[in-house]
Image 1 (cartoon, rainbow, N blue to C red):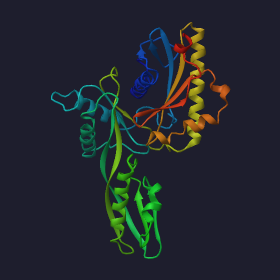
Image 2 (cartoon, rainbow, N blue to C red):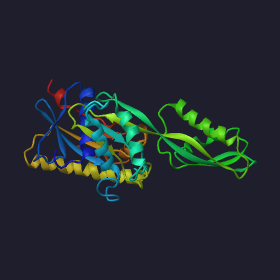
Image 3 (tube, helix red, strand yellow):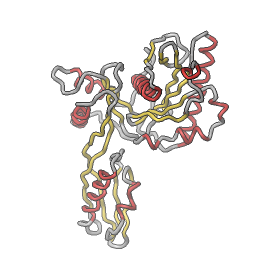
Image 4 (cartoon, rainbow, N blue to C red):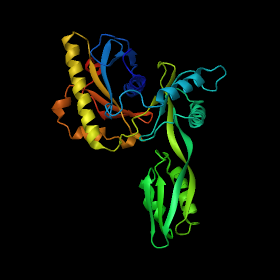
Length: 329
């Protein structure tokens, strides 16, 4: 797979592992340089043609995201270092949407240390959250009201944060890009903001120390050793359904065209899979499922399986109508 980016290779290995677990069969990436598809998975004598693409417009920021390659190289060096606490293997860092990677010191080294600790002890297929310390800014505007206006990552929590507070406040949480999975951890962050708010007088401003929560994962066995940093351009809006619909249509068209080219070239393809790399903080927030419902089924009729890879996981968007190994029985 010499023409695939490291992000595409990571998505391919996650898809192959997910398919192996779901269908109780072993799927492995197959090196077929002349394939019409982006990649091919093999299951015994059957072949799965795979089209891979991001759910953001690559024209926005063609090439690697600034700082991603350097961070990946540093973390890969940590994995391969003699005496490292990180077991040799393949790993991925899932950068939350709109988060810009640092390019200067000491920020790069600080992020490297936190992520390296997060990779330690992971088993193939496992993932965990790592916490990055950051500072939010809270201001009290007036004694009247019981309201916190929030910009940034904590905006969904403004009603919980506002309940019973004496006065009007503004919280700038643009530095926070991903909330934790566990509700209890979110409640701790909200309580910290509320505790600081209770101490303020009108016109006063204070810092609130919290953490951003990123995901790291270990890729399945068989993936190339090292660390892949998976990041969308910071200017991409993960909740822009227009872009998701456009990119979904584009990749579906590519998958259909690749199948036609494979058939014309006499290539054996038993199943067609499209795997999409999502730019969302949590996999449950992906918009490809909703976008597919708005498409004409005839446009993707020859695509058997569509899945989204994001935040360390895989989510099925389109289920195959038939499976080649079931038809053989």
